Length: 491
Ligand code: ADP
Image (spheres, helix red, strand yellow):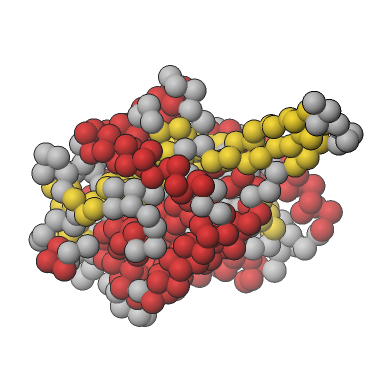
């Protein structure tokens, strides 16, 4: 990337065919710093013609990339991991500046995770093995794992570099080439990642575009040269991607929204589980996470004392300048998201059945009111039948619901069109396993609330999505296709 492009007002170029280019026509969009509403940077708004250029470059790069021994492709990914480690702090600060995510609790761990993702998939390259069929000495029949070709990837803004890495590394490892679109709100750190990747990859293997979802995302989803689309984002847009891909029977991997239940049993060690529930709610990422445990079902016998502890834990977290080391919680991403979260909180405050246990509307007199800051907010509500308990808020609003009976709580937990993550808190092994098996979710954690682990086949069911990407089998399922070859040796 040219040195001159590295300031706030000069637009950052996009990566197409190994070149750093402007969009055609050269239109730009501003990237806001959500902590102070100032300018974090500027990027180009790609057009459908740019998607076309990128897809053609990826198509042209594909034969040589797929022909390279997998071991060498893995080597390139390992070198990228090493370079990310060298640039860690710069990447982390950029993530923090454009997303408002706190540097210490979020952005730095995210940059570290991106390096780990490249390392993990770099090491897996030689595991792209096939199978042979036992058909006797006269027939040699085997399956090979082939790449699909050009993969399209569309990512959101909440963990931009980690999600870019989770698309780029497995797609390239499997021998595909890729056209990736960064989110409008958080493209700057992804361009830095692209710059690192480009140093270790043949031209055209990775193409990174910036711009709007309606233009660039839609053009990727519908492009005839793009053989598969990997998307992370909202369920609404996921549906559009799937519809566009259906026209040319292209497979999709969709990681969509969630309204994830967290079930607390009466045997819980209340202090310890309260901390776990706060972690699982991802308050330190302003709960802008599709796996946030945003509906907590607490047994009625401990409801009041337990929720008081959760409220106290959540209130301890420090909100402030995302770049300051002591800050735990930064800002929401933008004005739209801020207004949406405030509307939900207003609705909660106005509902006579809801009780506010922590937080509330952001105060305009706060010294942090320059940015989109919102405090962890917790409501209790008597049932799951409430808009705040049913819709994905993607902000720090937790709803706590009491339960009496195990079958009833499982039914409430499953009464949602989502099925991404779930959390169970109990010391009773039998209960934990039974509940985990009864929950309709792609991922259930028992007595912990952390993030995804590399090697775990992560993904949703129901309207939370389809496909798995975070693991060896995820890479094989999403980014390769089996081909059978049968040789008649009797000839
Ligand atoms: P979020 O709510 O996290 O912003 P979105 O689903 O709106 O989730 O956006 C996720 C990604 O999808 C972004 O990169 C966005 O630009 C892109 N996107 C938005 N609308 C479309 C669309 N109609 N077609 C393809 N991609 C889109």
